[in-house]
Length: 262
Image (cartoon, rainbow, N blue to C red; front, top):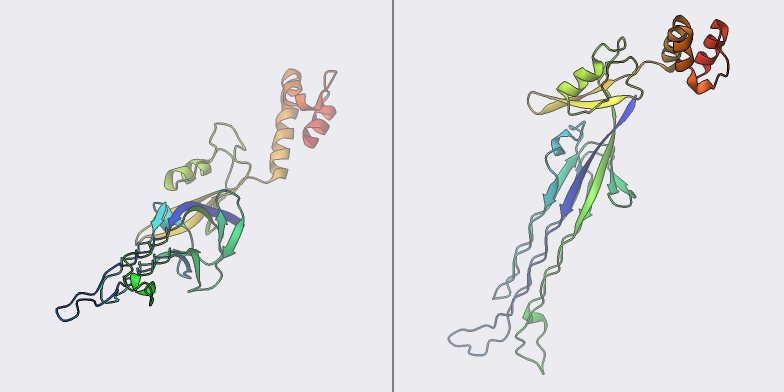
């Protein structure tokens, strides 16, 4: 049975470094001219496929992914260092969506596949790019471009490794809520779980596996409801089958028919 594992993260790429407005000054070159270098580009935020991962559990406490900024340029036409890229390793089959519009951006299907989630800002040009025959001493340079910031949603369809199957009110949902971070509905009556609940169980060496709480089949729930209605008193049966809008006191055959269809 397939389930959905998802997480929200905020990604921010690095801003570009500013260009340098340095002028060359040496002992025997009083008018060396502009020699300011370019600023370094900002770091990118990159999503990378990893076949050794099976869930998104490792990103549970990583809500903000920030790439480093580019460094400023310097004299002697020296460019600034580019910002370090920030990599987000995800399992194969992960789908990246825009958190606001829920639009699918791309999916990761191969090991080692890299897709740029956010592009870093470009570095500014140094003043060496702006001198000319008529303007030989430019004393300005370009600033770096700002980085980008955005919330994303990462979703992964996973196959449950362990399934909890048993009698109603046996404690399956309680067990799932204790050993995982899942929040299933828990109550003191039968057939509380109507849809499968998914939880991720961490264990030693930062590993994990997927556990699912499997609800009883619809046929079993129908039979249990019919038997409960049929064995109850007339007043209890009327309340149990109130959705059928009975106008008269129900008989045993009427109770069985209405309960089996509702």
